[in-house]
Image 1 (spheres, rainbow, N blue to C red):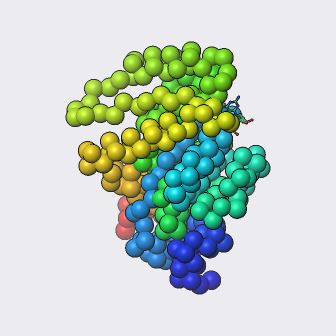
Image 2 (cartoon, helix red, strand yellow):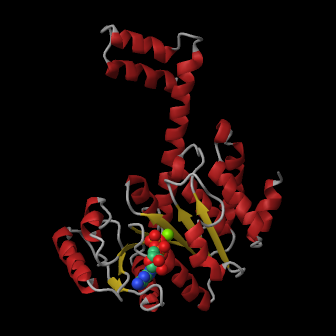
Image 3 (tube, helix red, strand yellow):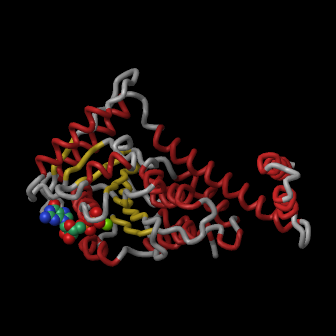
Length: 326
Ligand SMILES: Nc1nc2c(ncn2[C@@H]2O[C@H](COP(=O)(O)OP(=O)(O)O)[C@@H](O)[C@H]2O)c(=O)[nH]1
Ligand SMILES: [Mg+2]
């Protein structure tokens, strides 16, 4: 595989090249060989730093994909190149859009200014925390002005994924008990913009009120000027409220720019990536240690001593860490 060729094609916006590079990122580290990913990261580095990343999260069915598709339409009308990354940590499938999403994103399928991709991590060394920033880098280098990252907001790994964005949108919908769920998952804290979607349904006002109530309880004292997440009502399926949502995204962007904070998102992504790669590397080395000394491995020996009461597990772990560092 000619990596330089692929990178050059991806920079030209050739969809197949972009797709192959994201597959590489997704599969990366399988079999423990991370060499192509290292080379790819180095090859892409000079061409990145342009795209802004908008994360969308919320419970299944609130309308994330529909909203994402409506946003693509609005951003394209504005002449911006758009990438869509649907990140599903629970899905073993990847490559191309998920079935339902394919229907919702269908209208963009033939637009050369749009890249749509769903992603799981097939055994990636650093998991989503490493793979997502890498995939974002590919889309950035491919000339995307905006990348929309859709992820199901139900667990810790999803919260980690949305925390990679420059601007995070948390979606709720009436009658789904979303407010309570969001509070539990710690998702209120990561929201820069709230969307109450399905505003055509009964209960949208109540959802907005509940949200505002929770925000008032949740307000933390911060020094310096702080951003108050706006609440935007949308009917994503008809496009109603989408211009307001674009306005809210731009306002958040402007706030970050005004306060010299545009570098925060890229730095968060780099941090997450470095940490994930380092942890994966350590884990791999510890695993190596367990097989290093023939049949009776170093780890196995320590385990035997812990079971025999000769050693406590903390001291045993100290020995493991010490030998990994050596
Ligand atoms: N009534 C109504 N239905 C919507 C709206 N937005 C999305 N839907 C529908 O809700 C369902 C789930 O939407 P989807 O975008 O797949 O949700 P996701 O799981 O969060 O990505 C689909 O049947 C959509 O057509 C809306 O604003 N109003
Ligand atoms: Mg979806």
